[in-house]
Image 1: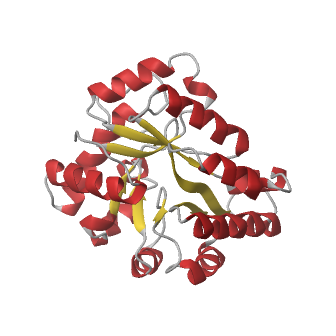
Image 2 (image 1 turned 180 degrees about the vertical axis):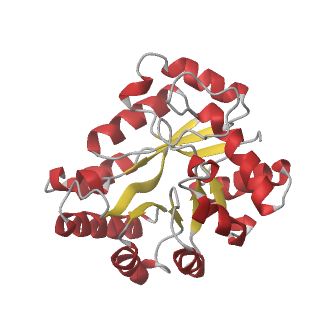
Length: 264
């Protein structure tokens, strides 16, 4: 299994990061991609990857929450970071009009610049979108044929949005949101519409802890070792075996991020 979205630089992992990685390996997570959310976090992600080559990989990018604080020359700095061999995509980037931690204008500008950068560097895009689907999709539209691949990270949208993403040949990242029958029912109803060759799995740790973990963990912190719980729910809702989900999502992740992993 490959966890394509882990916020491993998050301070909630500072006390036991190595133990978290050990538990992930014990849970048969064969690789993970650390999410870059700003320049500093992206730099930290690269350092972690260098400490764990061939197991950790990363993205580099500016999350929409951080758009107001983006440096004037952030594209150049991201380009330098992206030259590291462990960097496999640009992101997490996109639009978030739900929480509006940055202005809409700054979000659109910072997002657009990263889309252009991905096109120039020929790297995939690791995408964020919340309550901003139409402007998000319109920014991406001219680049569908000019960027190697795109994944809608932590997809929580409706059926129409899912169909539009799939029509653009995007991959769909599924998190523990699927395991929450309260907030995630809409996603549970449509997840079977995702072709198996467009599916990837991610924890988004330390966020979105699956609610189907038994016994319930003492900590609310999510971690990559919980990835199998997402696979279990996917298998139930998509009518595939868990092994089919694991095999195909690993292949999809290897292809998308240009990885060379060997184990399931």
